[in-house]
Length: 437
Image: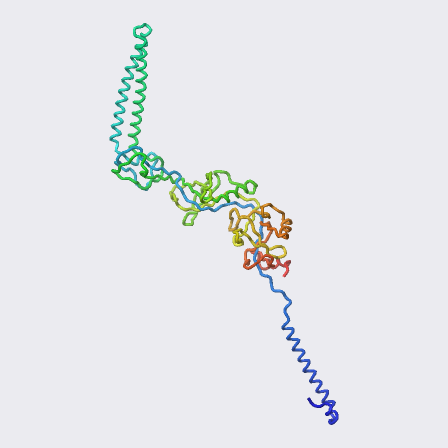
């Protein structure tokens, strides 16, 4: 730095130099201060908060919906008849085509009738003998009855004649029964179809010895028009339906008129509707399920016994039910279903609800109302107090918004921007003007 004191004494222009020097020094200091100010502005954190995560919601609205249950099942024959021999003998002929339809009373097999024809002839002869003896004893008893009072015969002879007549009557009855037995055995040599239906494979051929009461049947007949559809439903679901019926929430269909829609193994629906006919009277101990039997016409024999089907049963209709989209439902570690609800302040709340009692148009059918841990119903204002006290409250209410998209990594209490899943972007933005950002 130059010596200002020396310049002041030696140079006449020292005052001018001093003022120029001070001017440049001020400029340098001002530039340095401006740079620091700019750096501080750039390094200062932004006061604007980050945008809220956007989620799509569905608003719950009560409505009356039909209650349907989709259950697995199998087809079973309406009637199953085992064709069995009732007499012993050799099969002389098989009189049907395997796998064909047979009529009730149609002859299927012919067993050798020779011995049974002989037994029948013997029985006829014994009946004729008994009939002749009956005639003789009857005439004797009639004669003695006319002369016993005149003492032409003794009372003992008359009593003997009457006893012989009664004995002849008994022998005649026994002979008649023997004839009937022989005739029945002879008729059993012709094996007839007990029911109409489709007959399966024959287990015997001509020349096979068969016996009455043998273990294996000669063949099987399945009546397939109509045909039964047996489906199973868990006993817990059955109890839930009974509870809703008792409360008046579920309006059940009339017995014998409940329709059942069938879907076959290839995924295509069956053209004719079935009717729910009977509910089993007991619960299967191994599976905890109840069997429901439906009956459907099967004129073309399109459904075969043992075929797997799915049955959609129209059990009735639910009053004021809530439809919860299936994509909005999640399950916790206990297996309980829950959804994420956006409250009026835009905060996310996890809400557990009871299992649905069916599905409709891609949504679960859920009953309205809030409940405590012991399933006691509570009002919304009571539910708020219970939540503040740390007590769990489950259930859903009409008008609440549940998240259907964007729920990944969200937690309870997180503030979000709710967008109606069915609204346009402009309408969605307008619906969120009242929410804090």
